[in-house]
Amino acid sequence: MTNRKVLIIAEAGVNHNGDLAIAKRLIDAAVDAGVDLVKFQTFKAEDLVSKEAKQAEYQKKNIDDGSDSQYEMLKRLELSEEGHLELIRYCEAKNIEFFSTAFDVKGLEYLNSLGFPRFKVPSGEITNYPYLKKLSEYGKPVILSTGMANLAEIKEALSVLEQGILKENITVLHCNTEYPTPMEDVNLRAMNTIAAECKVAVGYSDHTLGIEVPIAAVAMGAVVIEKHFTLDRSLHGPDHAASLEPNELKAMVQGIRNIEKAISGDGIKAPSHSELKNKIVARKSLHLIKDLISGHKLMEGDLVTLRPGDGVSPMEINQVIGRRLNRNLAKGTKLIKEYLK
Image 1: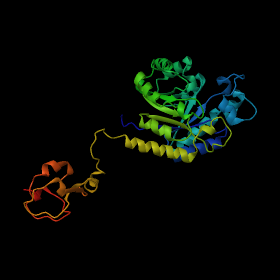
Image 2: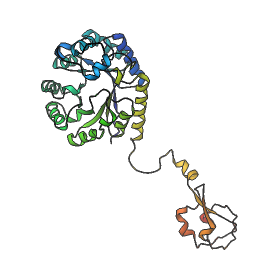
Image 3: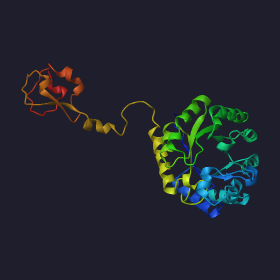
Image 4: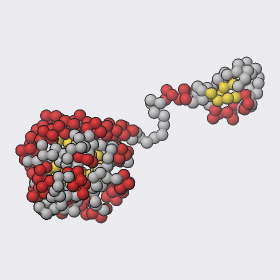
């Protein structure tokens, strides 16, 4: 495990509900939580879905507006080019990096025109060859989500990306594309399978309820964490119900940063600097169980182990038994080697 800082992406996605004022409040919440990037979504509904495309079950449940049209849903959630620029400026003023996911080649070209230093492939585009090929042409770092994919599909996508991108600039995120993801379907060990099989840096894009799974992913080696967040889970929209609220996002970030510290050691088992002072307090020494006179030959029944631990260690009891005392000692005396002949 390297001591690489975990990149935390707060996924605002479409939880702005098409309202730039809400989008700015989401950015404020991301800044307050201490994340690294705040991520939105870049798409034109007509370039993403046909007008016949139906909503996913979780989308219908969360929106519940009597329509099952994916096109109508997405049309309401688009960010205009002007909206992108306004949010980018807002992020710059708040000292946080604006990030976005594009869902088609036109979107990639637009984001690249804005000078994006990295790109994110959403799970649904992992089998989109023209999309992946365009990304490979940019040669910039890529984060690849793998929801719904098997290992063969991941390897195939990587083979396309690697035509123009160095493998060390690709991070693959284990992901489950069910909102929310049932705990029994998380299969977090698959993240490490991806790392071993594909020889890439790995992370985790989380759609479970709560914050424990992304924190666990960091403990298992994730170097990127992505998590949806919202201002209020009760808002209508496709992703609100499976998103963190601001206080939860902040708790997740703190948990991840704590785990980073906890796993950043050198792996050598030795007392840490902070605990050395407790050795004497917590460990024990040999003490006398009764008054003994000079010249007495020590037997096991003469000794008891008591704190503190700055006398003869109980681990040395076999070397002490049979030795004689060189002075009179009272009951309860802590045994030190200077008292032995």
